[in-house]
Length: 257
Image (cartoon, rainbow, N blue to C red; front, side, top):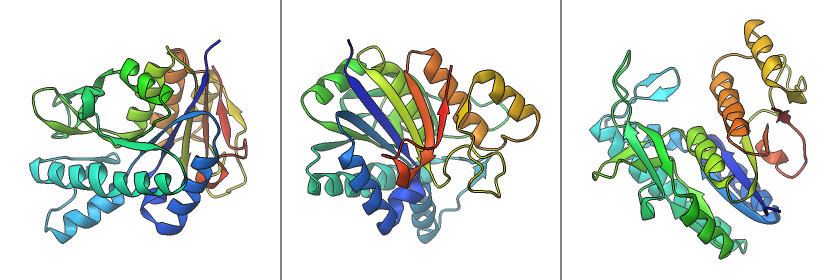
């Protein structure tokens, strides 16, 4: 019988504003058992880049990461945002450890090949060291993972936080019974994006395809749900998409195999 583990992915907006960060840290600290937190931080990176005179370019919601932008995201994700979260969790009695993929070689990536778009220094995850993470977790350490990986040749790579959460959850599913929770500013997957209460309580893969064909699910929610189904197919027990402030309420959308 595997022990339960919760992997929480939280969007940048929530960890970048003081009131929502405080609420998140309180709720995360209250989750019982083993847990991992994966965070974003894009808005802070965009703000700092602008102050430094570095223009931010986005394509399909993904950041183009040139050399100067890579320096900014490494500072912001691996430093400012990550360490604020770690310090806040320590204050709540959670023995957190901030990690990028480069730390102890925990997540190795390859630079995304240039196809229609050159994303620059962006990493596609190739390997997560589940054994190392599992050892930390069993010792009572709570990993707090920034959306940065490395290629093993000395280069840091900007890596999507949803992907980090999904790949980490999949790797740890060999050791734990994993629940993956994507939390953001909505109550779950909505039937009508203008109606906050139109939450779809559960979605199977067949229903997902139907909702996409009908235009109900679109935009950034499509890759989030694709990540969710990939995680289930790779051994993750359940995936939930919910409001960040409802982490302990058992609400939101349950993604079913």
